[in-house]
Length: 165
Image (cartoon, rainbow, N blue to C red; front, top):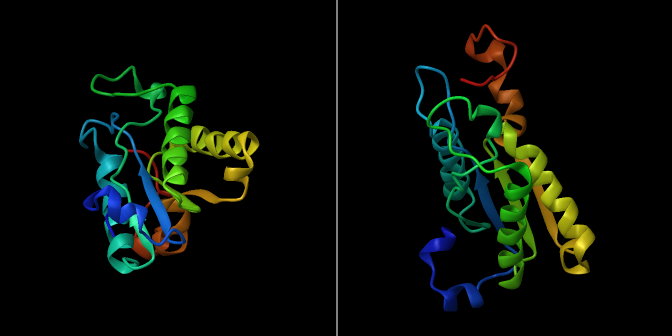
């Protein structure tokens, strides 16, 4: 179920045991050949597949296209926030989800630079209050979850793993 398709009354009455999924991404350089929103397109496609298959089990938030990509700012077009700011953004999004009464949040990551601030956000939230310590909050990158089906030998890839650009 797409979280944003509901009005506040629907969210108030929603099944709070369902998982709220927040896809995280970025807008950054991906070489000379790929669009700035490559990470956003990829994680959004994964999120759409998850929402389609698990529609009755999840509420899917829209993909957060902004990411922690300061390491790519030397290339024109990259739009980024520093890690500490991204950590605050994620924390406040999880706080909003918790305030709505949900108990389970999954951060579906689509950009390597978001890993540290995402994990930091979870750590800081659980240290901050028992509210978050009692919640189920998790984060994983889609390429880690899908590692076995994305193995290079299954697809004739020359590199040993999925890589950037």
